[in-house]
Image 1 (cartoon, helix red, strand yellow):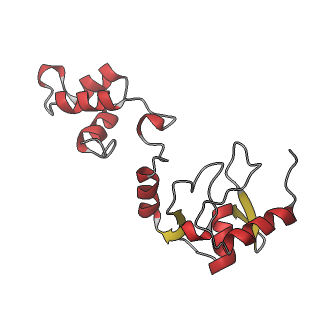
Image 2: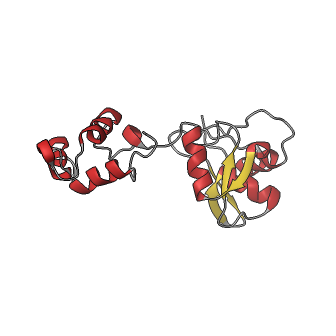
Length: 160
């Protein structure tokens, strides 16, 4: 398959910006990366380009998706599936849709959910029975700060 011309891509973005269907609309030929387009001389994600074509520049707001096809290399670009939100709303939407890279899906994770539960169960602030932050950090191969973040809920907070 050949590369889509810039004119054809722009036509697809324009069509998605004025969609009348409730079905997801996907760009093809974007393997391994998120679809991108150019609007007003600015290169951006395809969904943000579609929003800008239809409603104007969203500024600091994120373009969110009501469908679960809104992110990744085959992200939906149907304007009828888009709405604006802030950073916390964007994070919450990714988590709810299962597109978040938190926990073991994060490339730099060192702990599993089971280990987090074990750390929280065993942690004792004064280190009785070898269960201080330092002792647990050494046992699990992480820093004492990591243990503190796990115990206080600053990390892995969705696991209660």
